[in-house]
Length: 148
Image 1 (spheres, helix red, strand yellow):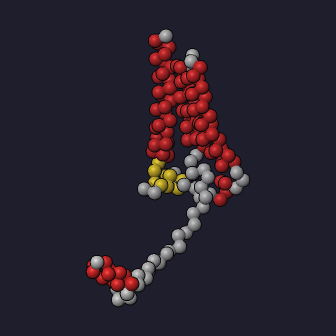
Image 2 (cartoon, rainbow, N blue to C red; image 1 turned 60 degrees about the horizontal axis):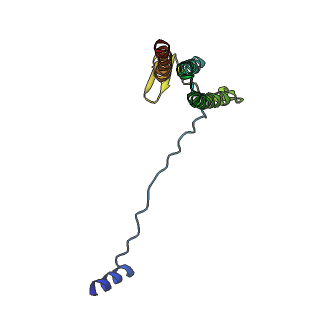
Image 3 (tube, helix red, strand yellow; image 1 turned 180 degrees about the vertical axis):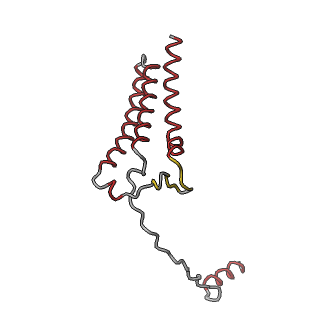
């Protein structure tokens, strides 16, 4: 009981109270960045990406299109893809989006956080996954045509 009384006294007394140290956070005002709606990506990359997904879905339809349930799942996936590209199209179509946007292309190179990249490097990095999807979809169609 004695320990409890000593703790209570310590908590209630001003002897052990220390005011917290003042915070010295000098907040630096960060420069405002302009809104980037197009991500600075050229239309050829968007078109190649859309074509890759179209080939992917075409391959899936040709390879598995005989089953109604598979067609339903492909249709749902196509709707999600249409929403993705539709959002990009809608944002790019807003008035003034290209006028106010800072270009990411500087002297033929794409400016990134880690440095500048050539067009070929940007094209390859952004389109490797969609192109592999297209290859997969066409492969499914070829395999199905050989087996069936």
